[in-house]
Amino acid sequence: MKKILTFFLFYAPVVAHANGAATVTTLSPVDSQISAGSYTIALGETDDPKAPRTWEGPIEITTRGGSHCVVNDEVSLIEKPLALVGGHYLYVPTYSGSEGALYVVDADTCAVAWKSKNYVGKIHFSGDWVVIPGQPRMKIGLRGVPTPAIGE
Image (spheres, rainbow, N blue to C red):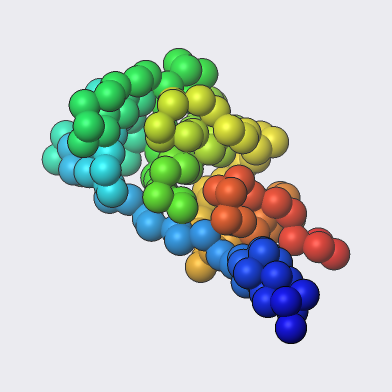
């Protein structure tokens, strides 16, 4: 009985989360700012204050606790859709000319956790998946970083 209880206490949580999905929250900026979870995110100057579609960056993130950081200026020329994943990973689509790249930024540190290959078109979220044009759809796991779907 002790072995079964030990298995359940130590291994069951891993099994329960092995197929778990991250929470994906699509963000709607107001002018050049987003309030999401414990973060206030400033996106920089917008293309149109009345109906913003793109922002120049740099992204500045402030927590309710008052800590502040600035994301690397490589993550600029920001477009929609933005999302917060797992409570602290910021998904940021960017563009340069006709190509885009998706960045995943750790909102606690402003560090880039992941970057997609370049693509042409628009990304979109579908549940706990991110779909990037010309690439296999990506499952957004509990660690916040997307991974290609098996067999795609």
